[in-house]
Image (cartoon, rainbow, N blue to C red):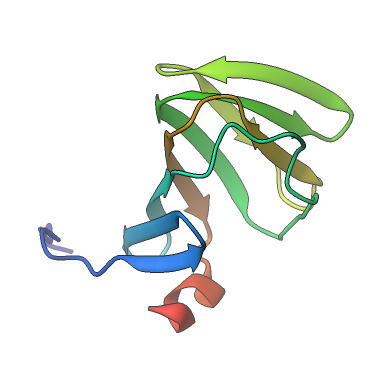
Length: 113
């Protein structure tokens, strides 16, 4: 499959002060999420999904809880989240940018585009 440059990928508001944009192949999805609603007093509600996920913190500082473990991560750090494991995040800084990869592709995200 030839490479596809997605310079003008539409941004989708997923919650107040939270936006995402994405690109994908048939099997892999990359999602950039910009947060501007921190710092947060408490974590978002936990959620899980059948997709493997990795998250790269491009900006900011975040508490990630994956299963029973909580990790304080900052720009340059990565987190791996296996499929079906409950996880959540809490922003420790005013803004943050996460770059997430999902396998397989999240059809629920594509439906919102």
